[in-house]
Image (cartoon, rainbow, N blue to C red; front, side, top):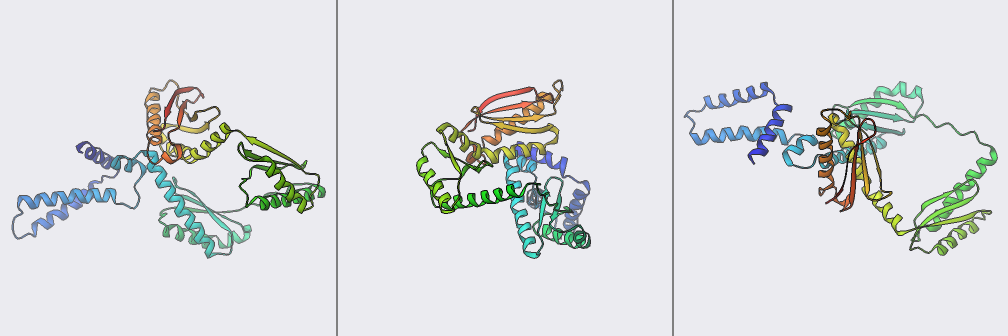
Amino acid sequence: MDKKLKKAKKYYEEHYYNQEIEDNIKEKVEQNMRVQKNPMSFGKKIIVTSSIIVLVISLLVGSTYVSPTMAEVVAKIPFISEFMKTREDQRERMELVNTSLGNKTDHTLFVSPNFKDKKAIVRVNESDKYIQTHKEEIVKMVEDELTNHNFNGYSVKVERVRPSPKPDISKEDQELVAEIDKVMAAIRKKLEHSDYHLSGFGIDADKEISMEVPYNKDTNKLRELIQAALDEGNYHDYTINIKRIDRDEMEKREQDQRWAKARIYIYEALKEKEHLDVTGFAYSNHPLPMTIIIKTSIHPWSFQKDEKVGEIEKLVEEFLSSKQAEPYVKDDPYKLVIRDKNHDDIFTEEKVAE
């Protein structure tokens, strides 16, 4: 317990300590002591001293926002786990911001946040003239909504949504695209009450319908349903190509989807620690095991190389072994690879998420 308190105290002194605040607290305590009619007993002095400690810890822990680094020190929660919790809370609140803004205006706008730099870009689907005229009004509305959802101190920038240029295609091709859209809609409707999922579903310009099914599904029944949708819509000259996915590939796809959130937060959290020089991220589970590749700008001859690599390894391993990551990674084996600025492997090790 003493070590934990010393660690928290050291972090507090380095990041939050302010001599003026301490002096003010001491002055208030001394004023209260001077107005006492009777000298304080030893027991009361202990209570006052303890109260000051409680006050400092309360200020430290009970603030509106506790950084992932601070939470890691106080609660011993893995840094990436705490980062994930904080970021998910921020994203949920930002969804509420956009929903509320959508209810307040007839114009299409969307707030894209940069949580780290506390910036918000508002993309508005209106003309340049409209945005120029109503810019201050839009900024004020967005700032109020951000504050209402505890996003304080954010700068707001307004941008126009630029329409995508229309492709220059012939009338014949436009008619084909429109027909393919109708065929896809008809097939989706036909399959919506079946136990087939639209995996790998698409139709190309040669009117070939492609779809994937698990190894244990009946391809003949699926083909019949697709053909029925074509016949009912009177669509001709379409071919059907159904690909069966084997068990190993299905398991890899399931793992890939399950790990998705864990991978996102590993990269985002490591980027938050700028001193680690993380520049990129990649992954693959072809072949197994799941391989996590951390790209860095660490120089191969840097005297800090081992220290930075060790910290990256520790942060990733602690997270993947935590209860917060367990639903996403289960007890899967994985391989961690760290690369230097020359794209050479400077660390590689296989582990198990447990």
